[in-house]
Length: 386
Ligand SMILES: *Cc1c(COP(=O)(O)O)cnc(C)c1O
Image (cartoon, rainbow, N blue to C red):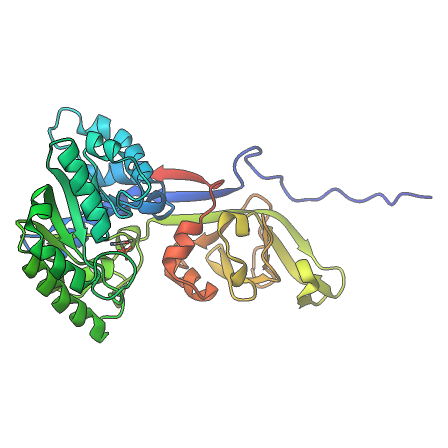
């Protein structure tokens, strides 16, 4: 048997061997600008808190919260107590000596957590039901201290919080309310990303009615990101954006700046030597002579399988459609149309200047929130512009 001698590949090897193959750049300067531009939209009485649950929507909660703290943000919402405790530690060095400790509100409430830790750490639970309010008030009685709390009224989500009937019932129980230092009464909008939806006004009216009935010396909070764009009536005393801070669009031409760039490295460029197919399931047919670039990002990095046949990467600013199914660690892009053929080690833009998180979400048939929170744990996050 004679071995055919193959000419070695003329391409250069990747420039940085051993480096992570994909990179996620988090633009903290853009995040800071988003914070400030949302702040400008608020009336003088309203404070801007930040929602940093789910690792700040996948961007990395500690550096995100630190960057927001540097812009004056002092109130943070997390989903769980664990998220709050780790952020409290991350912000401690910044807050030291300033007398401006950040306040953490835990959206999931005391549910399943140790109330002593809440009390000891000064964390503020969002209380989502009458039994939860009662339990927290009883804990306050046991330790002979008024305990801080947010009361959540459900005005239309049917997810968490007291319904309006329960809120009116609570309003009668002044003894229980006295045990608590109710800092805020809040509700959450179901349709704030649809400015014309009648449910917005309905929830606004119900929220006013329930908060008035509670008649507490507490601040009020209704608006998430979309709610901020509904106008000042929706702002009350604290607004709670997440998505808009991270660049997701709630207006016509997006006023928010992009906070992430995701790029995959090209691993190989190959030319099909015959007609065939690309990827698992042989679902995408290709002719001979198609130039394919294999890019180092797949569904394990958050490039959703639903992007098969719909997604694209940008190489040298040009759109290159993704061929076939998404693999765990890679996708294949058609680079036949490129004038200059890319080489291994070149970068392919997945989220960036040419396609936003919202664009990728639209291609995938989902929302920007899911794209951000799916960004894989193994992607190394590079923080720029702090
Ligand atoms: C997640 C969440 C927010 C933030 O919503 P965005 O749409 O990301 O601004 C605000 N309030 C509550 C109760 C939430 O669960």
